[in-house]
Image (cartoon, helix red, strand yellow):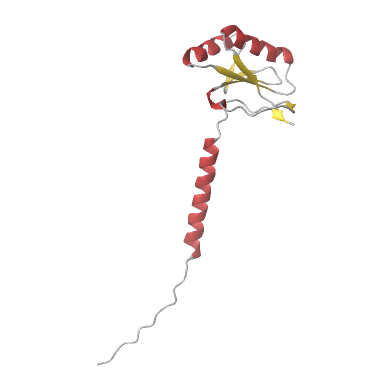
Length: 135
């Protein structure tokens, strides 16, 4: 009887599937971390202030954005000055503790910013903040 000699191959670690798994995990981590950032308003260049502080409960606040050209956005919806009181009243009725954050562009006309602040106060929203960048 003849015994057949077996040849054993050396074990190798396949690197290509490992790289695929690492890139999948990296992409998943990036997508999850980006979805955790909640930005309700329109991106504008904010004025800077040395006393700027981070707001703890920003997610529950509505964002009113005033651009340099005078456009007004309620969260990400463009509204006119005539529509703004109705949007604010609807928001106030739907929220237990209504809060508004005004994000005005650094070069926005001050009278537009004051008009937006005034509309929020007329509706009865007393918790109003102004968004700035830290110097």
